[in-house]
Image (cartoon, rainbow, N blue to C red):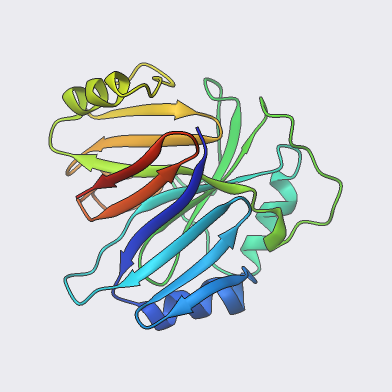
Length: 210
């Protein structure tokens, strides 16, 4: 599953644009009154301005599977890393992936993940152009299992068996991370909450969550 377009809401448009464009060096590919779109590899990531609350999301960027150390050095020079039990990185045996987390100025919990099962190694110096795609979106629901069943019924595969608190749906290129409202996000001191999301999946059409 591959996300071609994703749209989030933000109450911090100026700070978001500065952080991704000027701090991280991510290209702006479109902008207008109340929105900005960044190119994250093969994904178009749009933030739309809102005056309703302070939305925040969890999402992940795939990076080349052999460049986790380079990615960590790159992002550490630009922003602080989040920690969990005193550690600023993690390795998942089940997912065979290294991850780190940070927060952008809007409070979004952003993950860089090197998935060692993918054949996407690179020998180029790591930079903003090394962000390959948006590969995870956190989808927050009151009841996780029924929503997962709905996604599976629409043709989206389970990635791993989940629980009534958390379940991943999709594959290594694109995952919907379905989390129960109120569950604490990994590597963050924030509980999952529901905010509007729009996404387009290659070959799978449009998805809208609210």
